[in-house]
Image 1: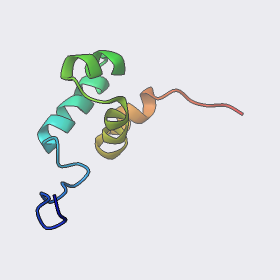
Image 2: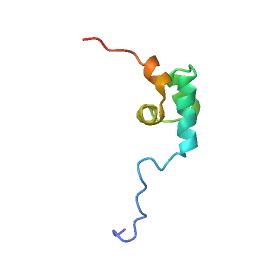
Image 3: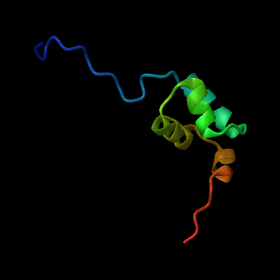
Image 4: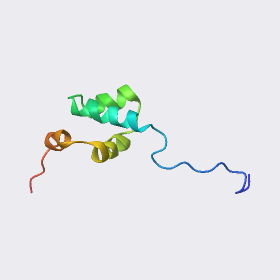
Length: 69
């Protein structure tokens, strides 16, 4: 297959709809563990982490574990 015959590459976040990503974030913020959401929706842990950073609200920021030095 030559370069011209290859299908165009999709963008990094093109695999999931924004509403789906926001629903995953909402589930975590409502109290489900990240592991449960990952298993329930069949997504990758890194994807969920990125979505939480991008779409998460102040609720998620408060729930995050604080790191002390």
